[in-house]
Image (cartoon, rainbow, N blue to C red; front, side, top):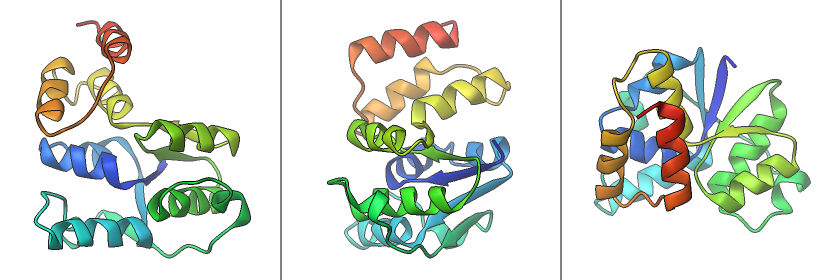
Amino acid sequence: MAIVVADTSPLQYLFQVGLLHLLQDLFESVLVPDAVRDELQVGRSLGYDVPDLTEFPWIAGRPTRETPAANQFDLGAGERAVFALAMELSDALVVLDDAAARAAAEHLGLTTTGTLGILLLAKERHLIAAVVPVIAKLEARGFRITEPVRRRVTELAGE
Protein backbone atom coordinates (compact mmCIF):
# COMPACT_ATOMS: atom_id res chain seq x y z
CA MET A 1 0.00 0.00 0.00
CA ALA A 2 1.30 3.34 -0.96
CA ILE A 3 -0.63 5.49 1.54
CA VAL A 4 -0.57 5.25 5.32
CA VAL A 5 -2.71 7.09 7.82
CA ALA A 6 -0.85 7.22 11.13
CA ASP A 7 -2.10 7.54 14.68
CA THR A 8 -0.23 9.23 17.53
CA SER A 9 1.41 6.21 19.19
CA PRO A 10 3.36 4.86 16.19
CA LEU A 11 4.55 8.36 15.31
CA GLN A 12 5.65 8.94 18.89
CA TYR A 13 7.46 5.64 19.36
CA LEU A 14 9.16 5.57 15.96
CA PHE A 15 10.34 9.14 16.59
CA GLN A 16 11.64 8.30 20.06
CA VAL A 17 13.81 5.46 18.75
CA GLY A 18 15.06 7.49 15.78
CA LEU A 19 13.15 5.51 13.16
CA LEU A 20 10.32 7.81 12.10
CA HIS A 21 11.97 8.01 8.68
CA LEU A 22 10.94 4.39 8.08
CA LEU A 23 7.45 5.59 7.21
CA GLN A 24 8.88 7.80 4.48
CA ASP A 25 11.15 4.99 3.29
CA LEU A 26 8.36 2.42 3.15
CA PHE A 27 5.38 4.37 1.84
CA GLU A 28 4.57 6.83 -0.90
CA SER A 29 2.44 9.06 1.33
CA VAL A 30 2.18 9.47 5.09
CA LEU A 31 -1.00 11.22 6.18
CA VAL A 32 -1.86 12.43 9.66
CA PRO A 33 -5.28 13.78 10.59
CA ASP A 34 -5.35 17.18 12.24
CA ALA A 35 -6.59 15.58 15.48
CA VAL A 36 -3.42 13.46 15.68
CA ARG A 37 -1.27 16.51 14.95
CA ASP A 38 -3.10 18.30 17.76
CA GLU A 39 -2.47 15.41 20.18
CA LEU A 40 1.23 15.55 19.36
CA GLN A 41 1.32 19.33 19.88
CA VAL A 42 -0.34 18.96 23.28
CA GLY A 43 2.19 16.28 24.21
CA ARG A 44 5.08 18.51 23.18
CA SER A 45 3.65 21.42 25.18
CA LEU A 46 3.58 19.12 28.22
CA GLY A 47 7.22 18.17 27.72
CA TYR A 48 6.79 14.76 26.10
CA ASP A 49 9.33 13.58 23.53
CA VAL A 50 7.06 13.53 20.48
CA PRO A 51 7.68 14.75 16.95
CA ASP A 52 6.94 18.24 15.74
CA LEU A 53 5.33 17.36 12.42
CA THR A 54 6.36 20.70 10.91
CA GLU A 55 9.92 19.32 10.92
CA PHE A 56 8.88 16.42 8.67
CA PRO A 57 7.64 17.88 5.38
CA TRP A 58 6.95 14.40 4.03
CA ILE A 59 4.17 13.93 6.61
CA ALA A 60 1.00 15.59 5.33
CA GLY A 61 -1.63 16.85 7.73
CA ARG A 62 -5.24 16.44 6.71
CA PRO A 63 -8.51 17.76 8.12
CA THR A 64 -11.24 15.19 8.62
CA ARG A 65 -14.97 15.21 9.04
CA GLU A 66 -16.64 13.28 11.79
CA THR A 67 -18.38 10.19 10.53
CA PRO A 68 -20.98 8.08 12.32
CA ALA A 69 -19.01 4.95 11.42
CA ALA A 70 -15.85 6.22 13.12
CA ASN A 71 -17.72 7.75 16.06
CA GLN A 72 -19.50 4.52 17.03
CA PHE A 73 -16.44 3.41 18.99
CA ASP A 74 -15.33 4.62 22.41
CA LEU A 75 -11.90 5.75 21.24
CA GLY A 76 -9.84 8.91 21.30
CA ALA A 77 -10.30 11.78 18.89
CA GLY A 78 -7.08 10.91 17.06
CA GLU A 79 -8.11 7.32 16.45
CA ARG A 80 -11.57 8.34 15.25
CA ALA A 81 -9.99 10.89 12.90
CA VAL A 82 -7.58 8.24 11.57
CA PHE A 83 -10.59 6.04 10.78
CA ALA A 84 -12.48 8.89 9.12
CA LEU A 85 -9.52 9.78 6.92
CA ALA A 86 -8.78 6.17 6.01
CA MET A 87 -12.42 5.64 5.03
CA GLU A 88 -12.20 8.64 2.68
CA LEU A 89 -9.26 7.07 0.88
CA SER A 90 -9.09 3.89 -1.08
CA ASP A 91 -6.54 1.31 -0.06
CA ALA A 92 -4.91 3.17 2.83
CA LEU A 93 -3.04 1.33 5.55
CA VAL A 94 -3.95 2.44 9.07
CA VAL A 95 -1.01 2.50 11.48
CA LEU A 96 -2.05 2.32 15.14
CA ASP A 97 -1.05 0.38 18.22
CA ASP A 98 -4.04 0.34 20.55
CA ALA A 99 -5.70 -3.10 20.56
CA ALA A 100 -9.25 -1.74 20.89
CA ALA A 101 -8.62 0.70 18.04
CA ARG A 102 -7.25 -2.09 15.84
CA ALA A 103 -10.33 -4.21 16.53
CA ALA A 104 -12.56 -1.26 15.66
CA ALA A 105 -10.61 -0.64 12.45
CA GLU A 106 -11.05 -4.27 11.45
CA HIS A 107 -14.79 -3.93 12.14
CA LEU A 108 -14.78 -1.01 9.68
CA GLY A 109 -12.93 -3.09 7.08
CA LEU A 110 -9.72 -1.08 7.35
CA THR A 111 -6.31 -2.68 6.89
CA THR A 112 -4.07 -2.10 9.89
CA THR A 113 -0.59 -2.52 11.20
CA GLY A 114 1.25 -1.07 14.15
CA THR A 115 4.71 0.00 15.20
CA LEU A 116 5.89 -3.62 15.30
CA GLY A 117 4.48 -4.30 11.84
CA ILE A 118 6.39 -1.31 10.49
CA LEU A 119 9.58 -2.70 12.04
CA LEU A 120 9.00 -6.13 10.49
CA LEU A 121 8.42 -4.58 7.06
CA ALA A 122 11.53 -2.43 7.46
CA LYS A 123 13.62 -5.49 8.29
CA GLU A 124 12.15 -7.40 5.34
CA ARG A 125 13.19 -4.52 3.08
CA HIS A 126 16.65 -4.34 4.70
CA LEU A 127 16.08 -0.88 6.17
CA ILE A 128 16.95 -2.09 9.66
CA ALA A 129 19.22 -4.98 10.64
CA ALA A 130 17.17 -6.36 13.54
CA VAL A 131 13.84 -5.90 15.28
CA VAL A 132 14.58 -7.24 18.78
CA PRO A 133 16.99 -4.43 19.77
CA VAL A 134 14.44 -1.86 18.62
CA ILE A 135 11.76 -3.54 20.73
CA ALA A 136 14.05 -3.17 23.75
CA LYS A 137 14.43 0.55 23.02
CA LEU A 138 10.67 0.90 22.59
CA GLU A 139 10.02 -0.81 25.90
CA ALA A 140 12.49 1.51 27.60
CA ARG A 141 10.22 4.32 26.32
CA GLY A 142 7.07 2.73 27.75
CA PHE A 143 5.90 0.69 24.77
CA ARG A 144 3.90 -2.28 26.03
CA ILE A 145 4.16 -5.69 24.39
CA THR A 146 2.81 -9.00 25.62
CA GLU A 147 5.04 -12.04 25.72
CA PRO A 148 3.02 -13.91 23.04
CA VAL A 149 3.31 -10.89 20.71
CA ARG A 150 7.04 -10.62 21.44
CA ARG A 151 7.54 -14.30 20.56
CA ARG A 152 5.52 -13.96 17.35
CA VAL A 153 7.34 -10.82 16.21
CA THR A 154 10.71 -12.38 17.04
CA GLU A 155 9.73 -15.46 15.05
CA LEU A 156 8.53 -13.41 12.07
CA ALA A 157 11.74 -11.38 12.18
CA GLY A 158 13.80 -14.58 12.20
CA GLU A 159 15.64 -13.48 15.32
